[in-house]
Length: 280
Length: 261
Ligand SMILES: Nc1ncnc2c1ncn2[C@@H]1O[C@H](COP(=O)(O)OP(=O)(O)O)[C@@H](O)[C@H]1O
Ligand SMILES: [Mg+2]
Image (cartoon, rainbow over all chains, first blue to last red; front, top):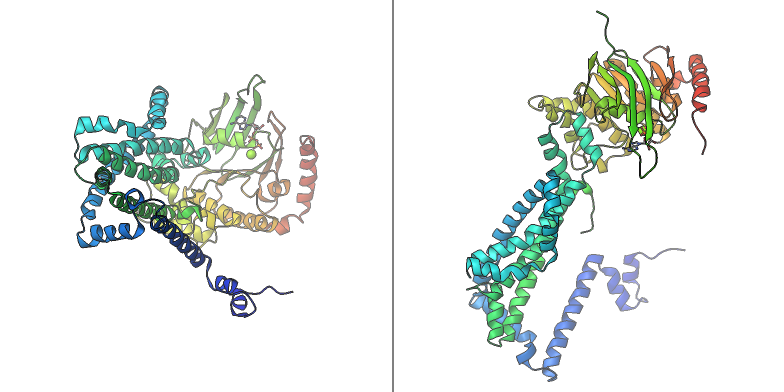
């Protein structure tokens, strides 16, 4: 008995065309083909619903109109770029601050157990609550400029980093610590060579979650009160009953978020190459 | 001046605290052992008798509840840089390459300046891992990881070496090859070694002396000199008549301690 290779299947005229095409594709290409089919189906259904008059353009816009708006905002007038830059700037500054403070606080709490015990309920309270609920407070204190967005973007990421860093320190392999201790390594040496590297996977996964939180936080704050930003654009468009504008903005956000997430995955894979293949 | 033993433990006592409401676990009971400088002393005993615990105490990772540890005649408390320790468990840093792992003790002691690169390289070469400098531990076989740990141990240039079942978890061939290489390296350097193993053949074939620990609470139950000439080759040694005599004698005593479950 023999098993047909992909090539044999692809070239055998007796095999149905569908299977012959499938045999020609690599698994990666096949996945993208399937996604393309799904995209066409979704867009087609959307367009179809409007054309059939089930719902009007006023409520759900239309793919063609969204595409035209994107071309206008991104290319013809290019006005989207300013808003995107404002949002990403708030995310970049806020997230960086949240990451640094989160890591440092996680390390401090792991080192001073008493402090951790004292603060635990407060941290868990803030971690568990929907932190975006604090946005009005930040806007009250810091105004409707970029500052309140930065603080909210940082604040929501801070807790993830704190908790992940803390868990990372607590999960350091005690045998590795002992081994390096017997080499005569100082406390600082241990932190540098053992504790921090074993926290890296925790910090990276915290960063990836924190990135999503930060983006949500910044957009949310912009929707409440701002002068620009993608969040502001969404809330202004919806205020004008401009459904097309809302959809176009959301699409831009989705693509940016996916791009950032993919970038983080690449960075993680590279930094954690010592772990071998990891499913992220 | 009479030379003090490189390592001596006197009247060591150690308990592990009770779990729940059970009694405390008596692990080491009046353990007395003196190892002269340059001796390769192997220690055998039934599993769970306290061999690793004793090494942890000597390494300064675990304070004894009674008795003391002397290193070259001086009381040793806590970590002692003159002692190198190869753990039973794999303790290579998984995020560091073979080269970085071997260099670690040099960095720990602040000796990682000029020339350390060379010595880490030459140590990897010594253990037969030339060309594997940039490999991460996960990319190396079990035997290769043991070699890296051996190189890392040597990089520390310890005067006293503690080894806890270093070749325990390897397949038979790899184990034999590593034993041969370990002998070759040690016979040139002659550090003082405390070598724990559960393999009696290994204990006799490698050691200048075999010490037997009793079942828990661990005590020193027996002590045998091994006078077979060096340099030794494992394959020759096991055909030596002294090997067979020692094996029978020690096994007779060890068997009483090993309870079959
Ligand atoms: N940290 C610990 N806490 C409690 N019991 C321990 C601890 N470490 C070892 N033990 C127990 O002490 C005994 C001796 O352990 P060990 O020294 O590892 O034996 P071995 O001779 O096999 O190396 C065993 O019964 C083990 O379960
Ligand atoms: Mg053990």
